[in-house]
Length: 150
Image (cartoon, rainbow, N blue to C red; front, side, top):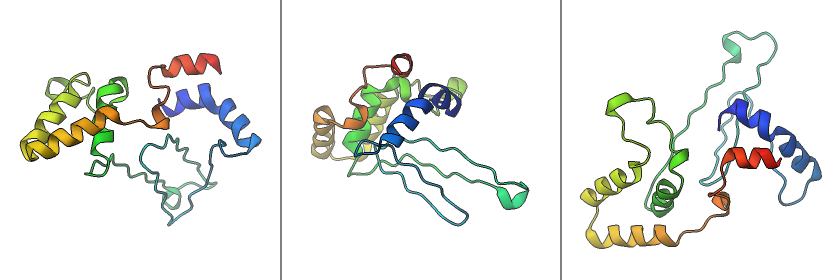
C-alpha cells in the first residue's frame, strides 16, 4: 500500500483506534536526528517523514529498509511468498530480467534447495505450511475491501 493510499483509506481508522487507547491501539512515535527505529518482523507499519521548518541539508530523512530472512524466520518468509503474492514488491519494475511475483516463492525455494541439506529444507518448508500469524489474519481480504469497510 502506498503512503498516499494508506493516508486516504486508513488514517481516520488509525486515529480512532489510537485515541481509544487499549492493547489494540496503534503505536505512534517520532524518531529524531541521530535516532533509529527497529520494526520487528510481521509488524504492519507506516512511516511519514515530517519536514521541520527551514528545510535544507540539516533536514534530511534517510530510511534504510531490508527484508530479513534468516533460519529463525525462513518458514515465515516462505509462507508469505506463497500466500501473499500480491504484496511482493521490488520485482515488477525490472522488465524481462525480473522474476514474476507469481513464481517468486517457487524460484526462491529452488535456490534454497541448492544451498540447504535436504532434511533441513524439508523441515523449513513443512513449518511454513503450519505457520500462523495474526499480522496476516485477513490475508484473503484485499486492501481495497478493508478500505471500503472503514
